[in-house]
Length: 447
Image (cartoon, rainbow, N blue to C red; front, side, top):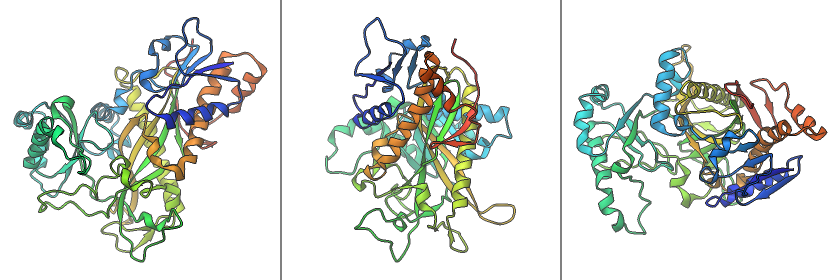
């Protein structure tokens, strides 16, 4: 009997998916809604939200938990930036050299500290801001769901943005409830930000080419929308990495247009694709990547209209696999901020931007992916009911590759032996169920 603590007080949808996954396992399971008092029954799995897990139990190899304790170098934007910078310095041939946008980190509590930063660690960025053809995106290191993201192309605008954040605490209580959602942050509470070069040549597609209901149809005139990909990545032990091959494409609410320095107030709607900022649209802007096969590529600068092919999608998925593996290797080389332990697993939501690059050697347009960020406990409920079935498959797969093998190692039954042999000889690059194995290494093992 496998005992599982399933505790998700703020995420009932996730809890329902975990319970369905546990019911699909080929082993008897007892589900608990709280951590049991001693004596504990082994083997025990804590498949719960991070804050509900008793992390001190990680010292016991008979207890599996659904989160690593320390993984800041993956899920905090400024830590991820430092991690990748350090890795690329040691491995200049790494794909992350081009797959991660140029990034600067700042630690700031008040806007008037910018002068000192530009005279020191942001000196290079100050020189870059002299070129107003380049645009930059500001992201709080520890905020999520699109909060605090701003776009700028000169130093003065950056200063105004930070001044607005500084004043946010004084005006927060005066906001009209009927206004648009406020995405500002309080600078003194966050302090850590990253500034990334804004990518101006995203792949553009009109999601309406893929109607999702009886009341929708393909438009006569197509309009290119920016989108990013949400890939679900499963890390297991220390360390095997899987990519769930059903990748989501999340679209902006309005057609894309390049940022215009003449605009006094820059409209972020064409640029932000986060579903958390578009809750009024439901699942209107959500598609599966595979559903986009056959759609027209509407990117600016395309000399002729082309179609997204199955080969393009396959290439995109392969690039994602490579970038995920390389990012995990970078994190493993930073053991202070990422500690892979053998009795843990975790689901991450990883965001990528797809870029239409016209600088190929053969003068042929090339599709590339850029890593944007990695999220712990991703907001899966925003996927919408139409595609909820892929999440059921995802959690069922997690149970099969992470939970069942743990039970097999803890048991000596014939059933456990059969489970342990199911995924033996699974090579990197091969797909089983709906998971592609991206990487497999062993930095620690169960004692």
